[in-house]
Amino acid sequence: LLKWDPSGYDNKNYIVVPIAKVWTPDLTLYDSLDSEMNGMDKNRAIVYSDGSVYYNFPTLIEVICPIDVTSFPFDTQVCALLFGSWVYHGNQLDMLARDNPGDLSSMKTNVEWVIQKIVVERHELLVADKLPPSADSTPWIMFFFNFILGLSAVSTMVQKKVGDLIKDIEQSTNTELWQFLSVAIDRLGLVLFTLTLIGGSSYVWSAK
Image 1: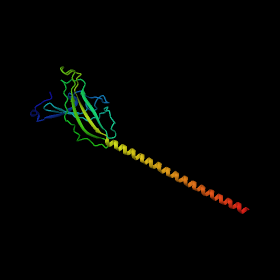
Image 2: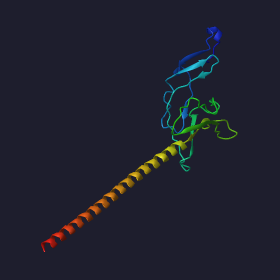
Image 3: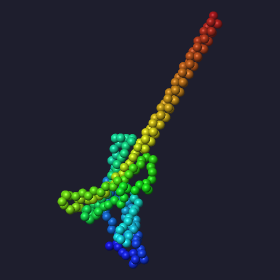
Image 4: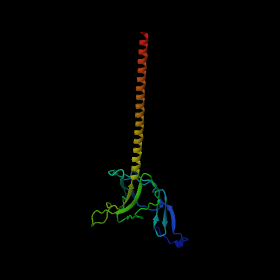
């Protein structure tokens, strides 16, 4: 057991050890594009004198998240992240959320979407109501991410609208330019025709 009396160890109530020295559950992210969470086995954990272990590690995860664009561009998306164990059943491993709802204080803002909230729900699946949990009744934690993509959609619409407007202006400018050139050439042709007619007639009459 990872327990000790701090008074017998210079009042040391915690130690920092490599995570490989401590047992960790085989947590798995369902629907993940990677086979495992990168960095989970490469950092250090804090072990407290009462036996509790705190482990936090940086990682980058990629998951499959279906998107419904029925209400585009002012739609709200919900992405569910399911965490659980493949080996341990409900009597061996109990998963609880530390914070519920999730803490977003360290979240960086983004101009294209906004995370509204993180809600944690705990579900334990049983083979039958009167049977004890088995290896198939894996408990997992479901993290729901609520994304607001309205700002991104609006900016896309504005960009498209401005692009179409610029295109229309260019087309309108080109059309007006060609109209002006056609009128100028027509007038020039009329003037040349009139001068030629007058000059020719004058030459004929003077010859007589």
